[in-house]
Image 1 (cartoon, rainbow, N blue to C red):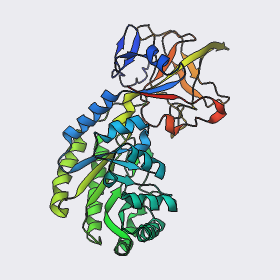
Image 2 (cartoon, one colour; image 1 turned 180 degrees about the vertical axis):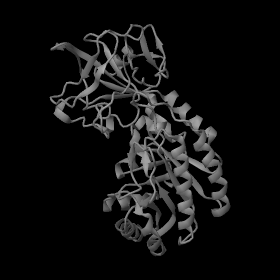
Image 3 (cartoon, one colour; image 1 turned 135 degrees about the vertical axis):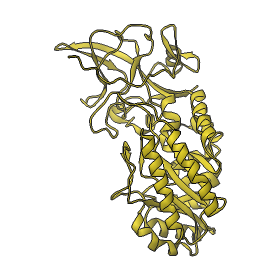
Image 4 (tube, one colour; image 1 turned 120 degrees about the vertical axis):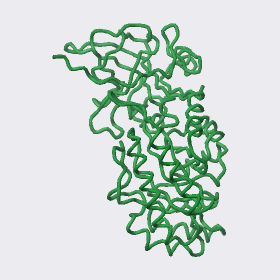
Length: 412
Protein backbone atom coordinates (compact mmCIF):
# COMPACT_ATOMS: atom_id res chain seq x y z
CA UNK A 1 0.00 0.00 0.00
CA UNK A 2 1.33 3.45 -0.95
CA UNK A 3 0.91 6.19 1.65
CA UNK A 4 0.94 9.66 0.14
CA UNK A 5 2.83 12.34 2.00
CA UNK A 6 1.12 15.67 2.79
CA UNK A 7 2.04 18.45 0.39
CA UNK A 8 2.84 22.07 0.97
CA UNK A 9 0.06 24.59 0.46
CA UNK A 10 0.17 25.70 -3.21
CA UNK A 11 2.79 28.38 -3.74
CA UNK A 12 0.92 30.24 -6.47
CA UNK A 13 1.26 33.81 -5.20
CA UNK A 14 4.39 34.44 -7.31
CA UNK A 15 3.69 34.08 -11.04
CA UNK A 16 6.04 32.36 -13.45
CA UNK A 17 6.86 33.18 -17.06
CA UNK A 18 9.35 31.60 -19.46
CA UNK A 19 10.36 29.18 -16.73
CA UNK A 20 11.20 31.84 -14.12
CA UNK A 21 9.56 33.05 -10.95
CA UNK A 22 8.72 36.74 -11.19
CA UNK A 23 8.39 39.28 -8.40
CA UNK A 24 6.72 42.54 -9.31
CA UNK A 25 6.97 41.47 -12.94
CA UNK A 26 10.77 41.02 -12.73
CA UNK A 27 12.37 37.64 -13.49
CA UNK A 28 14.38 36.03 -10.72
CA UNK A 29 17.57 35.98 -12.84
CA UNK A 30 17.26 39.75 -13.34
CA UNK A 31 16.67 40.22 -9.60
CA UNK A 32 19.81 38.20 -8.93
CA UNK A 33 21.75 40.51 -11.25
CA UNK A 34 20.40 43.58 -9.44
CA UNK A 35 21.40 42.03 -6.12
CA UNK A 36 24.98 41.67 -7.32
CA UNK A 37 24.78 37.94 -7.97
CA UNK A 38 24.88 36.88 -4.33
CA UNK A 39 22.12 35.56 -2.06
CA UNK A 40 19.21 37.94 -1.57
CA UNK A 41 15.75 38.44 -0.14
CA UNK A 42 13.08 40.02 -2.28
CA UNK A 43 9.74 41.35 -1.01
CA UNK A 44 6.73 42.10 -3.18
CA UNK A 45 5.26 45.46 -2.17
CA UNK A 46 2.03 44.83 -4.09
CA UNK A 47 1.40 41.59 -2.19
CA UNK A 48 2.05 43.31 1.14
CA UNK A 49 -0.27 46.19 0.30
CA UNK A 50 -2.99 43.76 -0.80
CA UNK A 51 -2.71 41.67 2.37
CA UNK A 52 -3.06 44.79 4.50
CA UNK A 53 -6.03 45.98 2.45
CA UNK A 54 -7.70 42.56 2.78
CA UNK A 55 -7.34 42.62 6.57
CA UNK A 56 -8.51 46.20 6.95
CA UNK A 57 -11.53 45.48 4.76
CA UNK A 58 -12.91 42.93 7.24
CA UNK A 59 -11.98 44.56 10.55
CA UNK A 60 -14.90 46.15 12.41
CA UNK A 61 -14.88 49.83 13.34
CA UNK A 62 -12.70 50.58 16.33
CA UNK A 63 -10.10 47.87 15.59
CA UNK A 64 -6.69 49.26 14.68
CA UNK A 65 -4.13 47.23 12.72
CA UNK A 66 -0.55 47.41 14.02
CA UNK A 67 2.55 45.96 12.36
CA UNK A 68 5.05 44.09 14.56
CA UNK A 69 8.37 45.50 13.36
CA UNK A 70 10.34 42.45 14.52
CA UNK A 71 8.81 40.41 11.69
CA UNK A 72 10.75 42.38 9.10
CA UNK A 73 12.44 45.72 9.87
CA UNK A 74 13.82 46.48 6.39
CA UNK A 75 13.71 50.32 6.24
CA UNK A 76 12.06 50.55 2.81
CA UNK A 77 9.46 48.00 3.86
CA UNK A 78 8.74 49.94 7.07
CA UNK A 79 8.06 53.09 5.03
CA UNK A 80 5.59 51.10 2.94
CA UNK A 81 3.90 49.78 6.08
CA UNK A 82 3.78 53.17 7.80
CA UNK A 83 1.53 54.55 5.08
CA UNK A 84 -0.92 51.66 5.29
CA UNK A 85 -1.31 50.36 8.86
CA UNK A 86 -2.58 52.22 11.92
CA UNK A 87 0.47 51.74 14.09
CA UNK A 88 3.71 49.88 14.81
CA UNK A 89 4.78 47.67 17.70
CA UNK A 90 8.48 47.64 18.56
CA UNK A 91 10.66 45.66 20.95
CA UNK A 92 13.79 47.79 21.37
CA UNK A 93 15.08 51.34 21.11
CA UNK A 94 16.64 50.38 17.79
CA UNK A 95 13.27 49.33 16.39
CA UNK A 96 11.73 52.48 17.85
CA UNK A 97 14.22 54.62 15.92
CA UNK A 98 13.44 52.72 12.71
CA UNK A 99 9.70 53.12 13.27
CA UNK A 100 10.03 56.87 13.75
CA UNK A 101 12.38 57.17 10.76
CA UNK A 102 9.78 55.35 8.64
CA UNK A 103 7.26 58.07 9.44
CA UNK A 104 5.06 56.37 12.02
CA UNK A 105 3.70 58.83 14.59
CA UNK A 106 4.96 58.21 18.12
CA UNK A 107 1.39 58.27 19.42
CA UNK A 108 0.70 55.11 17.37
CA UNK A 109 3.72 53.07 18.50
CA UNK A 110 3.68 50.45 21.25
CA UNK A 111 6.87 49.21 22.94
CA UNK A 112 6.99 45.67 24.39
CA UNK A 113 9.70 43.35 25.64
CA UNK A 114 10.71 41.68 28.93
CA UNK A 115 14.15 43.25 29.33
CA UNK A 116 14.07 46.98 28.74
CA UNK A 117 17.23 48.97 29.45
CA UNK A 118 16.97 52.11 31.57
CA UNK A 119 18.08 54.34 28.71
CA UNK A 120 15.68 52.93 26.16
CA UNK A 121 12.77 53.30 28.59
CA UNK A 122 13.68 56.96 28.99
CA UNK A 123 14.01 57.28 25.20
CA UNK A 124 10.56 55.73 24.69
CA UNK A 125 8.95 57.98 27.29
CA UNK A 126 10.59 61.07 25.80
CA UNK A 127 9.34 60.09 22.35
CA UNK A 128 5.80 59.68 23.69
CA UNK A 129 5.18 56.04 22.73
CA UNK A 130 3.01 53.64 24.73
CA UNK A 131 5.20 51.29 26.77
CA UNK A 132 3.94 47.88 27.87
CA UNK A 133 5.03 47.17 31.44
CA UNK A 134 5.98 43.51 31.86
CA UNK A 135 7.25 43.57 35.45
CA UNK A 136 7.33 45.70 38.58
CA UNK A 137 10.79 46.85 37.48
CA UNK A 138 9.29 48.20 34.25
CA UNK A 139 6.74 50.18 36.25
CA UNK A 140 9.46 51.66 38.43
CA UNK A 141 11.62 52.58 35.41
CA UNK A 142 8.66 54.19 33.67
CA UNK A 143 7.79 56.31 36.70
CA UNK A 144 11.41 57.43 37.03
CA UNK A 145 11.64 58.22 33.32
CA UNK A 146 8.39 60.17 33.39
CA UNK A 147 9.63 62.36 36.20
CA UNK A 148 13.03 62.78 34.55
CA UNK A 149 11.72 63.90 31.15
CA UNK A 150 8.96 66.01 32.62
CA UNK A 151 5.94 64.23 31.20
CA UNK A 152 4.03 61.17 32.37
CA UNK A 153 5.05 57.84 30.83
CA UNK A 154 2.27 56.35 28.71
CA UNK A 155 1.84 52.87 30.17
CA UNK A 156 -0.15 49.73 29.42
CA UNK A 157 0.08 46.56 31.50
CA UNK A 158 1.01 43.47 29.55
CA UNK A 159 -0.84 40.58 31.16
CA UNK A 160 0.35 36.99 31.16
CA UNK A 161 -3.03 35.22 31.22
CA UNK A 162 -3.78 32.03 33.10
CA UNK A 163 -5.07 30.52 29.83
CA UNK A 164 -2.98 29.84 26.73
CA UNK A 165 -3.37 30.25 22.99
CA UNK A 166 -3.90 26.67 21.84
CA UNK A 167 -2.06 25.46 18.72
CA UNK A 168 0.40 28.38 18.76
CA UNK A 169 3.68 27.62 17.04
CA UNK A 170 5.50 29.74 19.62
CA UNK A 171 3.95 30.24 23.05
CA UNK A 172 4.56 33.52 24.91
CA UNK A 173 2.11 33.19 27.80
CA UNK A 174 -0.38 30.97 29.58
CA UNK A 175 2.13 29.52 32.04
CA UNK A 176 5.36 30.69 33.68
CA UNK A 177 6.66 33.33 31.28
CA UNK A 178 9.18 36.12 30.91
CA UNK A 179 6.50 38.03 29.01
CA UNK A 180 3.97 40.13 30.88
CA UNK A 181 2.80 40.22 34.49
CA UNK A 182 0.92 37.16 35.72
CA UNK A 183 -2.84 37.68 35.64
CA UNK A 184 -3.17 36.94 39.36
CA UNK A 185 -0.60 39.65 40.23
CA UNK A 186 -2.00 42.48 38.10
CA UNK A 187 -4.86 43.50 40.38
CA UNK A 188 -2.53 44.31 43.26
CA UNK A 189 -0.32 46.47 41.02
CA UNK A 190 -3.02 48.56 39.37
CA UNK A 191 -3.44 51.13 42.20
CA UNK A 192 0.30 51.92 42.03
CA UNK A 193 -0.09 53.07 38.42
CA UNK A 194 -1.89 56.24 39.49
CA UNK A 195 1.11 58.24 40.66
CA UNK A 196 3.53 60.90 39.47
CA UNK A 197 5.37 60.00 36.30
CA UNK A 198 2.77 57.52 34.99
CA UNK A 199 -0.23 57.77 32.68
CA UNK A 200 -2.06 54.44 32.63
CA UNK A 201 -3.86 53.73 29.32
CA UNK A 202 -4.82 50.07 29.18
CA UNK A 203 -3.79 46.47 28.73
CA UNK A 204 -1.87 44.22 26.36
CA UNK A 205 -2.53 40.46 26.14
CA UNK A 206 -0.41 38.43 23.71
CA UNK A 207 0.37 34.80 24.41
CA UNK A 208 1.49 33.17 21.16
CA UNK A 209 2.24 33.38 17.46
CA UNK A 210 2.15 31.34 14.23
CA UNK A 211 -1.31 29.85 14.74
CA UNK A 212 -3.28 28.38 11.83
CA UNK A 213 -6.36 27.40 13.87
CA UNK A 214 -8.88 30.21 13.44
CA UNK A 215 -11.20 28.82 16.12
CA UNK A 216 -8.38 28.80 18.67
CA UNK A 217 -7.46 32.42 17.88
CA UNK A 218 -11.12 33.49 18.10
CA UNK A 219 -11.52 31.77 21.45
CA UNK A 220 -8.34 33.41 22.70
CA UNK A 221 -9.51 36.88 21.60
CA UNK A 222 -12.79 36.44 23.47
CA UNK A 223 -11.04 35.17 26.60
CA UNK A 224 -8.50 38.01 26.47
CA UNK A 225 -11.21 40.65 26.19
CA UNK A 226 -13.12 39.07 29.09
CA UNK A 227 -9.91 39.19 31.17
CA UNK A 228 -9.43 42.88 30.34
CA UNK A 229 -13.03 43.59 31.35
CA UNK A 230 -12.44 42.00 34.75
CA UNK A 231 -9.22 43.92 35.33
CA UNK A 232 -10.75 47.19 34.12
CA UNK A 233 -12.90 47.32 37.25
CA UNK A 234 -9.70 47.92 39.23
CA UNK A 235 -7.95 50.19 36.74
CA UNK A 236 -6.73 53.58 38.01
CA UNK A 237 -7.93 55.44 34.88
CA UNK A 238 -10.16 55.07 31.84
CA UNK A 239 -9.23 52.25 29.47
CA UNK A 240 -8.06 53.91 26.27
CA UNK A 241 -6.13 51.07 24.63
CA UNK A 242 -6.48 47.27 24.49
CA UNK A 243 -3.91 45.29 22.51
CA UNK A 244 -5.37 41.82 21.92
CA UNK A 245 -2.28 40.54 20.10
CA UNK A 246 -2.63 38.51 16.95
CA UNK A 247 -0.74 35.30 16.37
CA UNK A 248 -2.02 34.77 12.81
CA UNK A 249 0.08 32.13 11.08
CA UNK A 250 1.06 31.33 7.51
CA UNK A 251 1.59 27.83 6.05
CA UNK A 252 5.24 26.81 6.04
CA UNK A 253 5.24 23.02 6.19
CA UNK A 254 3.61 20.04 4.44
CA UNK A 255 -0.01 19.57 5.45
CA UNK A 256 -0.54 23.18 6.58
CA UNK A 257 -3.22 25.33 5.01
CA UNK A 258 -3.85 29.08 4.97
CA UNK A 259 -5.69 30.66 7.87
CA UNK A 260 -9.45 31.20 7.60
CA UNK A 261 -10.18 34.67 8.95
CA UNK A 262 -13.94 34.06 9.26
CA UNK A 263 -14.14 32.92 12.92
CA UNK A 264 -11.60 35.58 13.96
CA UNK A 265 -13.54 38.39 12.30
CA UNK A 266 -16.75 37.11 13.90
CA UNK A 267 -15.12 37.30 17.34
CA UNK A 268 -13.87 40.83 16.71
CA UNK A 269 -17.32 41.92 15.53
CA UNK A 270 -18.69 40.80 18.89
CA UNK A 271 -15.88 42.35 20.90
CA UNK A 272 -15.64 45.77 19.22
CA UNK A 273 -19.13 47.14 20.00
CA UNK A 274 -18.98 45.68 23.51
CA UNK A 275 -15.67 47.50 24.07
CA UNK A 276 -17.13 50.79 22.82
CA UNK A 277 -20.14 50.43 25.10
CA UNK A 278 -18.02 49.62 28.16
CA UNK A 279 -15.08 51.96 27.67
CA UNK A 280 -16.19 54.64 25.23
CA UNK A 281 -13.72 55.64 22.53
CA UNK A 282 -11.29 52.78 23.20
CA UNK A 283 -8.64 51.69 20.71
CA UNK A 284 -8.69 47.92 20.08
CA UNK A 285 -5.37 46.83 18.57
CA UNK A 286 -4.72 43.77 16.43
CA UNK A 287 -0.96 43.21 16.22
CA UNK A 288 0.24 41.27 13.17
CA UNK A 289 3.71 40.64 11.79
CA UNK A 290 4.41 37.59 9.67
CA UNK A 291 0.80 37.41 8.46
CA UNK A 292 1.26 40.75 6.68
CA UNK A 293 4.70 40.15 5.15
CA UNK A 294 5.69 36.49 5.44
CA UNK A 295 4.19 35.15 2.23
CA UNK A 296 5.31 38.18 0.21
CA UNK A 297 9.02 37.37 0.49
CA UNK A 298 11.46 34.97 -1.16
CA UNK A 299 15.01 34.02 -0.28
CA UNK A 300 17.13 33.26 -3.34
CA UNK A 301 20.60 31.72 -3.41
CA UNK A 302 22.74 30.32 -6.20
CA UNK A 303 23.68 26.64 -6.34
CA UNK A 304 27.47 26.31 -6.23
CA UNK A 305 27.94 22.56 -6.46
CA UNK A 306 26.15 19.31 -7.05
CA UNK A 307 27.80 16.27 -5.49
CA UNK A 308 26.97 12.66 -4.78
CA UNK A 309 28.06 11.06 -1.52
CA UNK A 310 27.40 7.33 -1.12
CA UNK A 311 24.37 7.57 -3.35
CA UNK A 312 22.90 10.72 -1.83
CA UNK A 313 22.70 13.86 -3.95
CA UNK A 314 23.62 17.19 -2.36
CA UNK A 315 23.02 20.64 -3.78
CA UNK A 316 25.38 23.10 -2.10
CA UNK A 317 24.25 26.70 -2.10
CA UNK A 318 25.99 30.02 -1.58
CA UNK A 319 23.88 30.95 1.43
CA UNK A 320 22.39 28.89 4.24
CA UNK A 321 21.40 29.20 7.86
CA UNK A 322 23.57 32.29 8.19
CA UNK A 323 21.00 34.07 6.00
CA UNK A 324 17.86 32.08 6.74
CA UNK A 325 17.99 30.48 10.16
CA UNK A 326 14.28 29.66 10.15
CA UNK A 327 14.42 27.66 6.92
CA UNK A 328 17.28 25.59 8.36
CA UNK A 329 14.98 24.49 11.20
CA UNK A 330 17.00 26.24 13.89
CA UNK A 331 14.52 28.98 14.77
CA UNK A 332 11.90 27.35 16.94
CA UNK A 333 11.37 23.99 15.25
CA UNK A 334 11.45 20.91 17.47
CA UNK A 335 11.48 18.48 14.56
CA UNK A 336 13.00 19.91 11.40
CA UNK A 337 10.59 20.30 8.46
CA UNK A 338 11.19 21.70 5.00
CA UNK A 339 10.04 25.11 3.85
CA UNK A 340 8.59 25.06 0.31
CA UNK A 341 11.44 25.24 -2.21
CA UNK A 342 11.80 25.72 -5.95
CA UNK A 343 14.45 26.11 -8.63
CA UNK A 344 13.49 29.64 -9.57
CA UNK A 345 14.88 29.61 -13.10
CA UNK A 346 13.54 26.12 -13.98
CA UNK A 347 9.86 26.46 -13.06
CA UNK A 348 8.74 24.74 -16.28
CA UNK A 349 11.01 21.71 -15.76
CA UNK A 350 9.54 18.44 -14.47
CA UNK A 351 10.52 17.14 -11.03
CA UNK A 352 13.55 14.88 -11.01
CA UNK A 353 13.24 11.24 -10.02
CA UNK A 354 15.93 11.46 -7.33
CA UNK A 355 15.43 13.46 -4.12
CA UNK A 356 18.17 15.87 -3.09
CA UNK A 357 19.42 17.43 0.11
CA UNK A 358 20.07 21.17 -0.11
CA UNK A 359 22.80 22.49 2.17
CA UNK A 360 24.49 25.83 2.64
CA UNK A 361 28.24 26.60 2.66
CA UNK A 362 28.79 26.58 6.42
CA UNK A 363 30.97 24.16 8.35
CA UNK A 364 28.13 22.68 10.38
CA UNK A 365 25.71 19.79 9.72
CA UNK A 366 22.90 22.11 10.88
CA UNK A 367 23.15 24.07 7.64
CA UNK A 368 20.30 22.36 5.77
CA UNK A 369 17.74 24.19 3.62
CA UNK A 370 15.99 21.10 2.28
CA UNK A 371 16.22 17.47 3.37
CA UNK A 372 15.25 14.73 0.90
CA UNK A 373 13.22 17.05 -1.34
CA UNK A 374 12.00 16.57 -4.90
CA UNK A 375 13.03 19.41 -7.22
CA UNK A 376 13.67 19.78 -10.95
CA UNK A 377 17.12 18.66 -12.07
CA UNK A 378 19.40 21.45 -10.86
CA UNK A 379 23.00 22.32 -11.63
CA UNK A 380 25.56 24.87 -10.42
CA UNK A 381 24.43 28.34 -11.39
CA UNK A 382 20.74 27.65 -10.90
CA UNK A 383 18.79 29.65 -8.33
CA UNK A 384 17.26 27.98 -5.30
CA UNK A 385 14.17 29.79 -4.03
CA UNK A 386 12.79 29.50 -0.49
CA UNK A 387 9.15 30.59 -0.27
CA UNK A 388 7.42 32.10 2.81
CA UNK A 389 10.53 34.14 3.58
CA UNK A 390 9.18 37.64 4.14
CA UNK A 391 9.27 37.40 7.95
CA UNK A 392 11.98 36.42 10.42
CA UNK A 393 14.57 36.06 7.70
CA UNK A 394 17.58 38.35 7.33
CA UNK A 395 17.28 40.14 10.68
CA UNK A 396 16.61 36.90 12.58
CA UNK A 397 19.66 35.07 11.21
CA UNK A 398 23.33 34.97 12.31
CA UNK A 399 24.64 36.77 9.23
CA UNK A 400 28.11 37.32 10.72
CA UNK A 401 28.61 33.59 11.33
CA UNK A 402 31.83 32.34 9.68
CA UNK A 403 32.39 35.66 7.96
CA UNK A 404 30.30 35.09 4.84
CA UNK A 405 28.78 38.18 3.15
CA UNK A 406 25.30 39.20 4.27
CA UNK A 407 22.24 38.72 2.09
CA UNK A 408 21.02 41.68 0.06
CA UNK A 409 17.41 42.79 0.57
CA UNK A 410 15.21 44.11 -2.25
CA UNK A 411 11.71 45.60 -2.18
CA UNK A 412 9.98 45.65 -5.55
